[in-house]
Image (tube, rainbow, N blue to C red; front, side, top):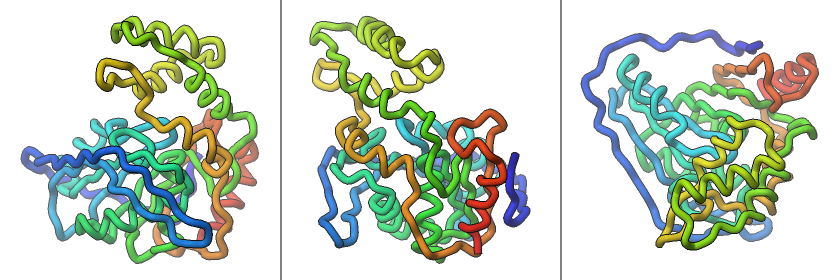
Length: 275
């Protein structure tokens, strides 16, 4: 199922070898005070070069994900379209800094700070799951920064209560990995512990991509404390009065668990979002 707000096609052009640009920043907490604008954090990103005269493509990953989720598609699109392609780690994910604030307002502010700095506005903004909601909020707050919007497997309303993300976070936080554990031993231990809560092998493998070694110890690179505190915000879309009038595409998987069970309710939510 998909909803077209405006039909469009990327032109196919060849491009020589891309020149990726990397940014990795140290962990640095940041927070917003009540009633004030969220303080942006310097996001980790990878930028593939392309023609500066054409709107770049910007990919935003979902919960527990990171920018490397889009490595293959980013490279392919850079080669086929000749555009610049940016993949970004959201705050508290991947190589981006940890912060106690995990609201969509904060994640939107991070991009409002980063994209103009890189000269990547207006852009084609493509967000999956949590990244889709961040993209939607950015389009509402700063429509001049977004040339086109693509939201994948997400809607601008509350996520279904059947999602088990709170249980995932709790299970990950409860795991204690011995200091002497090897990589294979740590992964085996974590997989066994998670299997009590998460039946899906593919989901466990996905979560295991967040297990990293730091100073000889294995730990989660995703900020589980911040996620646990703000998961209710992540599973909801912040109430807004604005609508977005730019070209938009909402993509929904046929077996998706991340949107409303009723297709009519999903389409009504999209119509309310669009001007």
